[in-house]
View 1 (cartoon, one colour):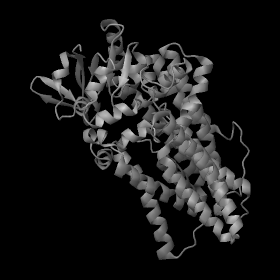
View 2 (cartoon, rainbow, N blue to C red):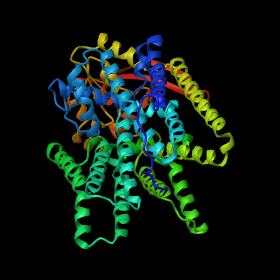
View 3 (cartoon, rainbow, N blue to C red):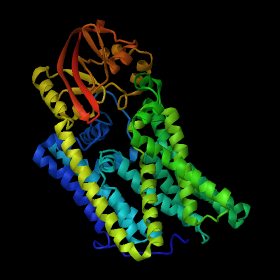
Length: 533
């Protein structure tokens, strides 16, 4: 199968599924906020999305790359920040609402571009109707949440689709030009800069492209030239970014990446495998790529069937994802909350391919099958989005608590108060008091080093922190008269937390509710006041 044998004219009519995707997401994610209030709009974004938004606003205001206004940080993916910054410079969101609308607009534009590129890729491989069906899968609520969550997921998806589309040229028997080598290397570098852990996925694709080129029996000079073209952009761009980190911050890696793979968080959250077992949808995503790889290799080894060029692309993609999944399970504490963009996109392609194969076997009823599948996906998208709106609104999961206690702190704490808490993205964006993030994602390397030694409380005092707050929806332990958050224990270096630093503590909020029909969640917001030095 020649994956480049089909071309399609792009028009609004041909992209009706992308238009429908944007309408569904816009109505349920933006329109519902006008009914239920601004907190529902805020709930569209991950807490990490607010790190990007506030850091971008601080950069635009001339304060540098900082979340808390105290320490300079590189705890974010650079390319997504580079996309967000021009919008912040251009529109200057001065209010909380304008900032939320700006973040939503950037995310939905990127999501629409991703939908167009996926449609083009699937239309070229399977035809127009399977492409529409693949795009409609993106309207499912949980997938939507990942891609419009205010983080780098939509940009990563865009670059991955372009990267894999470019890689497909190396699988075919056609002539690969020097431009193809340069472009594949450039796209690989951009994917890595969008999310550094995807260097594993990129490396496997680049190695596969190089191995496929070997079939043409090029001379040594040609092989060396192709290697240089393929590696030039990754070395220059990714290497330059790492060297910049070393020069500016004293370490090659961004602080967020080091924290997520360190024992600092692992002591509190446990292994990635345990989190995956707790979340069945995550476990399914983690398993898809290895299962596809195993099935494809079995087909080739035991049945001796010739593998098409498209199958080869999917095998390489599945192998790259499998290596990525193994990396996550071995190194990352909270893999259940990871943004697994590549496995999700592979799942969309597999679903569209399954529809394509089914139609080929049932040509006499193909229109009925397509109509039924399309209507089913639209109904699934609508019901899943509606269910999310109801669930978030009914469970107080729409960040109502964040709004309530940001206002409480603004009214009851002195203007020079500095509040420290983990998962501080939205609270730090809403609260006019200075807020320090204590899980280290957008802090500095000094904080990480002392936190690993269990001495972060002392550092917070030296930096002028006046209050320490538990995380919203945090895991807590009850011990005598005190309630401890996981973060206090890790910060102070002991199992139950050292209370000697505080003059008083108070429970601001305590509530139990059903996060879903089977999960009872407990919110405890507790505020400790540091003693004066």
